[in-house]
Length: 296
Image 1: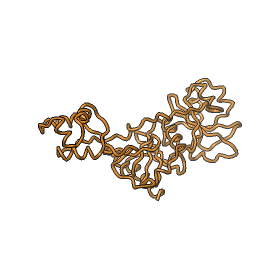
Image 2 (image 1 turned 30 degrees about the vertical axis):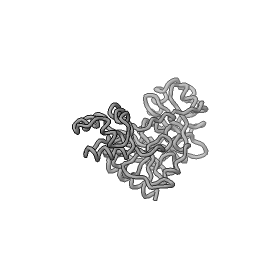
Image 3 (image 1 turned 90 degrees about the vertical axis):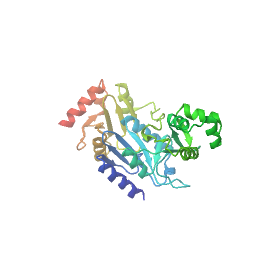
Image 4 (image 1 turned 120 degrees about the vertical axis):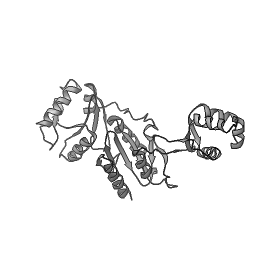
């Protein structure tokens, strides 16, 4: 089921002119770029998404300046509904169908949280429709079985409203009052920054001016940002994984290099010795060396 869904999402993105990179069993399954960058975790059961995976995905997404989503079809208890945004550890979660509609600009209308299912009410539209029907706030409140204060609050500021109340309002006015929800702006990845002190190559790159963090469950072992994004991986006994690093670099529009303690060669990728990096004084200098060796 997961493989079928993953390929459906990949094919859809490519039909929408995204370049894609598939990396099953990582902190993401699909990386995709058009003008925007997306990192997607595709699951059958979204409850199988773990806190550690979310941390890795948000960190990688932050460093790559991308949006991240979890796509699935059900939780342990129920099927996910279309046109509803859910949340897993601060990351928007939704059905593949809702995601596809979102990419095409048709955003969902509902958000599901532990407190229930909510929509976003347009306060100006509510106030105008009430006045057009010549209703006072108290009269409308009586029709809904809520307080006048509740109506006043909904007319004064935009906010989440339980779906049952939204449906009742739309039945009364025979008009749509629900605003669509932009999943790209929905959750703030407040925990996306790495809290690690940094060691080894990560510490060296931070010392010369990069915002650098080691990453897990991804093609690169380290991602660093300055004016450009650079990604790297260390060569150990063999060059396993270098092809994936190169493909990931192309899709994410990042500059890739590999690090070795000796003069080694990774096909298609520039190699820098660890002792060389320790002599580099700035991000621009490192990027210049990588670009020169890429062109050689």
